[in-house]
Image (cartoon, rainbow, N blue to C red; front, side, top):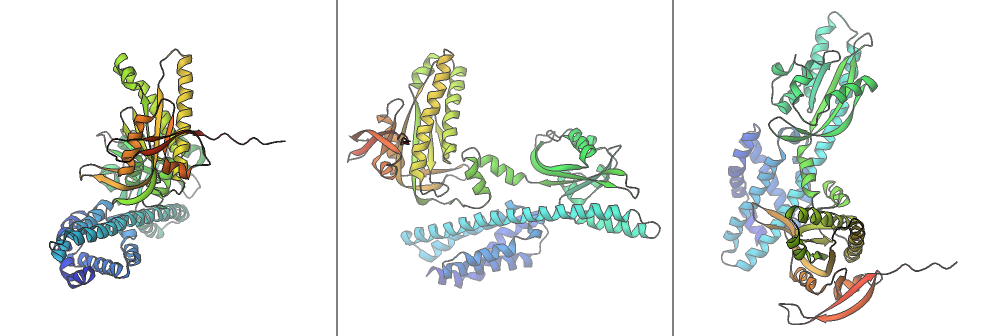
Length: 503
């Protein structure tokens, strides 16, 4: 029914999307309405094929044809993203028209289509980043070719000079990264391309003739003196990532690389510098690094695993940890001391979570919530959770040993773990979204905290079934938790000692 409904209204959907998308696209890049409509029509056809086959392959092919080098250089990812989001917004109106008052079928179809849209947005970002990386590599090759051509052609004289200038200008302007040529002795800018004009927000007439220091001297994080020394020593500026901040406070991440060029006598005349803006990817990295371990973050950024944006069911383990008697400690010490001590303990706890490739969901006052098995699928999520718990207790014990030696007060840690099925995904509003887990198993894990004593690790029956070889059970009890009719079996556990090896 849904496929037939959409197929019958394909032209209407295309027209509605064009009306929503084209004003945004036209503000970012000059495109004709007919060209935009043709791309929308291809996307809608791919969407219908994907529904018909229950397979993302048609949409994958559409994205591969849409996200090409021209798309990366002319169309910001945010604009493309808004275009696909507009399609998601249109789905609800169409589904209401299709199903009327049948809210159950409407909700089921909406969940399915939003899942398809979210998967499509994730693949869009992945295609865009792949094209950007390939484009940057091609630009690097163009830079080297430009340097070689410049070096070879400068020995020619007479009538070839004008041809050489036109040839070099064509190569220079074809490089889509910012390109700058500076004199070796004076550091004055001799030439820039259009991409550098866009990058700096200044015209070539405003840049050429000024020194590099005059133009970029107020940019924090840009080691101009270090670049000059590196060029003098080895003839290149090694490709590195730089975090820059302009005088007005704007931040940017850039790859910067340079290479000297020579005159026809073989004399070093200056340097060609290539700058590529990678701010979008690095800001994404900066945001995710706050709650993902580095190995997990690298897998997500590399596109090896795609975390589901919409809520979906997942088998995982959740870990709650909090510091015992922290309220009493806070009452007895000034706020500055309380914050410093809390940060010291939380840092040790987070390191243990990341060591087991867990996800830091959130801080909870004097404790934290960590997930294992989300966003990445980890079949051994329960094992990772208990290993993180034991490492956390060990880290706190070592920290307490150091603090006692210094005559400072100490705190103890209680940890509870539960394993089961929960809903994971982006939860919240349009203004603020958080990747988290919700469900009864999360509530159980949190309420188990009331049963944990200082220095203990408490796991549910479901967790113990998956980690039996990892732990020693010290005590088992039937616990009644608030809001639950049936008692819950829980276990106080510790790490299993290694088996001694006999000679």
